Image (tube, rainbow, N blue to C red):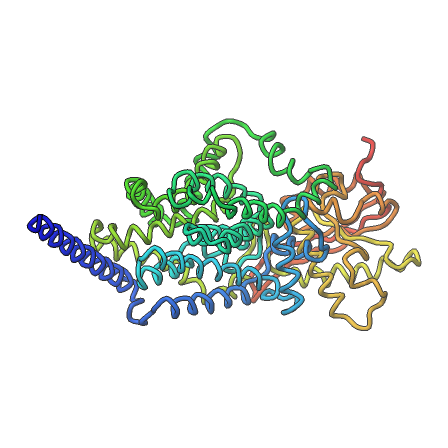
Length: 547
């Protein structure tokens, strides 16, 4: 018996030495990976890496031009509400808070985004600390959070994704801490889930992830006999309640738009599937996609013995699997998988620290590491993006100049009938309307004294979208009713007119007369950005006219 005990003690000491040796090798491997990018020379510990990310993302928030989609969400914030047609309200609430503190400039608009992005990075590092990957592994994650395009953008673009990803990561972390039964962590998980749902409907996938873990993880399964999991669900539901109330008040149109209406337009085929796979390879990063595939295989083999594997797979796989299947029918946008990128990239870090570093040739690892510098390398050049001409869809340059010209035409046209404010603007789509409306309002607010007490309000001489010609315009359908403007004159602002002649023809049907009065050529430092036509439209007939 004594001999057997001695053999067991010797074996245990050997295993401890083996684990310590593996940890030492893993740490060296991560150091070598950081060496490949010359980052170890900066002596980056997790705290230093975090502040580097904070400064870089703050620079991006402050210096990037405001994009059309961001201007649309800024317009949300000018109409505070419980929810909105195409998204829950969190993005509007964050923009409202940020602009009230820092003003309506780029940083004020993106301040909430910046905080959510840093919160995601911080929580991911804390979770890795609990996973036992060591300081170098935490540093690697922090740097990957801005080297991965899909995660980098949640640090500096104002849209629903930053709050969604932050809430998603918060649920992952809080549930991990709640494994030991602390009620406070269950409540934190419920709050994080509710906040994620207030950001975007895809947070609903936290439910199958949480249920899978409650059934698969022995420590969590024991929590089913306690109130924690149930109170978390109740708290999440209460936090999400404003969105439910808004939908009840509006015939559930947001729920219908994001579910049945999307699939009603779907058509079975491989087109969107190929776009989905290729697009995700780019926004996640081709090298990381290969690493994710390797880490998933490694985590799957450890599923029964390693709770970390269960965690990362439960939060990282359901959402991509769902959208992969959906891509056979509908277009899946590039950013829809953003919350799943957090557990997938965390899985890469755990795999690399504990296995991947010894399985990949050093030369190949160094080459791969260099490619991860692509996104960080563009950070210093963020201000120069405003010199790049916009393509179709979004735009970001010249709207202050366009708004100034539009306001000049309003000053000439509106006094004709002697009624102040008996006039409106409109654009061919909601993105252009958002940029025009934002810049007009900022222009008016900067003037003084105000020519009319309501001139700084969005409802005064409103900017409308394609709903003027009877085409659905998302949240714009809730802000200014075209029927209330029948008989009024308007200014139609049309960027990229060479591609949109059909919108001019459509506008002619809805006004007594329409005439182009000016063509603007927007340039920056001598570089052509875009052309814009301005049309004076007389006698609005309404959104529906007889053929």
